[in-house]
Image 1: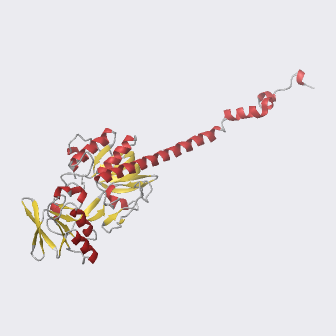
Image 2: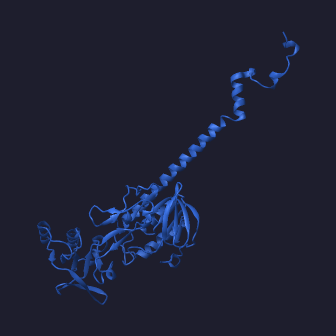
Length: 368
């Protein structure tokens, strides 16, 4: 577990136990931090609990993020943590182990023995990339073993690129990378026979198709130089594109009655939610890859802000309803005070109202 205390930038790491807050954010990636900043700027009390395991940690730089293109992932998160703290939010380096209902709110327990009570939850737990079982693949992940043309494609432009076919998106991936290089090879590997139309489309764009399984990566001077097939043949490459299976980290969500469902493209699973991230478990929002496996960093930031705005609006509505109920209770109770009854009696009865003076004996002038 990465301790935030060791992160650059002087991040506040004081751990607060048994705290009541408006929102607990689980996951301190781009979505979680963006959501936390938005909530804190709305004067909400926020705790972000992060286990320090960002999915994009292997990457040397993030791309496609306006004004921050190429920034190291850890640097971006460090800046984000500082921004959360600057608005009064709290950053906790810990792992959430259980979540559950607590009346109208929630209880969140951590591995470090801390408990937080929250009115709402924003779950940004992300996903896990399940890679094919090929030796060395995981070690090169995010470097020269890639999956996203928008994240890493420019860096391998005009170089020999291989696409490892592991699922239905393989042909689509190959055609996307063909936009960046005219040296693209599709390794059919573990998928079934390609259809006639797929082969024609690949041929029309000059994408070669190689039969047989890829068994090994060839590495020289800490660089991918090629792959070796089961047949023993070697194909030189500068990058290998792999579509992992994307699996949502939904363990703590399952305790709230939420489970991941298969993505429409059969590339992984994700937790269902509406356009703001609100799930079927009232009071629980999700953002980033746990809700959409295809979200990149810019989309993750937007999703965090969108969910946070919805959470704040929901809390405002709840607080207004409560204030209105209190006002109406006070108004009804005020009708039955002694002062109110006396005033009403005077308005209705005038001088005929009952009172002590009505019990006095009549004077001589009043006697008949």
